[in-house]
Amino acid sequence: MVSVQTSMQWDPVALSKYNKMLNLIPVFHRRLAKEVVNKKAEQMALARGSTSVEESDIVKSFLTEVPKAFIV
Image 1 (cartoon, helix red, strand yellow):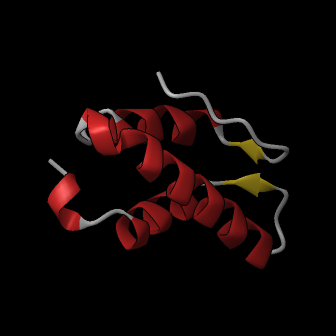
Image 2 (tube, one colour):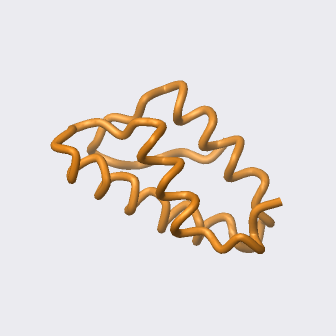
């Protein structure tokens, strides 16, 4: 499981799904994908005026930040 270290709250169900998505990425790219998706998801949550990251933030961030070639 990939831990998320942040000051924002993450929806537990969404975080569980996110970890499953991250585990599908090749191990050599996983750390980088985690960094960019975490950052983008939090930016999207803040843009919505929220203090917590929701599933929609994670999905949009994952699809915009992770190259399609890395998604199995």
